[in-house]
Image (cartoon, rainbow over all chains, first blue to last red; front, side):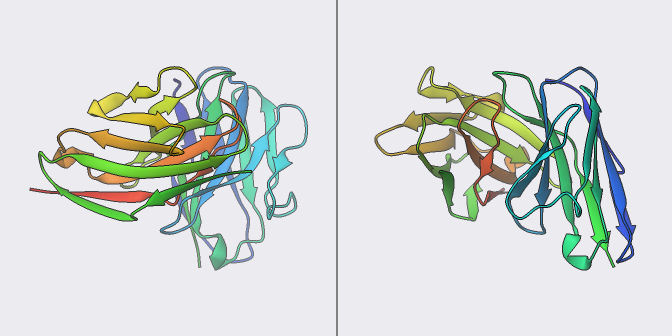
Length: 113
Length: 113
């Protein structure tokens, strides 16, 4: 496994603003993912963060709303843009090496007022 | 297409009793199956994984799961519950070890003294 950190751990934001969440791993990984966990719900994959190219988004998620960067093999960011209260969720990054399961970060708890 | 069904959103057991959390999957390809646990205000921790090797998989904290292809099931068990097992448990399926995870809706386990 690896040590995965996320910043911030939590935040309270005003509607219409944007928040960028960082995910840092202490070793190089093959794949990085971003998930959303809405209150009382399960996890839903937002996108796969691809190193050096555009992220691959799942149905229902678009780049304008959730831009993602992955400049190298240990770091990725997810931005939640033009936020509304419906964006209040826990956002989790996960990482994986080839042939290995995904390991998750501690999550970022976002509340939008 | 792949999907996971977890029967029972809430399960309550007495300390020392058997824990049984149910998971059924649907997959058009040989599945990789996982159980994750989420303690309050934390990220997800991998409990165990099935990747087409032994059908009985042993994980951390005394948990194990058995892959039954004929029943399309991957139920999680633990012989004797501890108070520290109280958490939410998620079953997940993927089409490969590092492909995207499809999560079940989760089962919240309560352990009564």
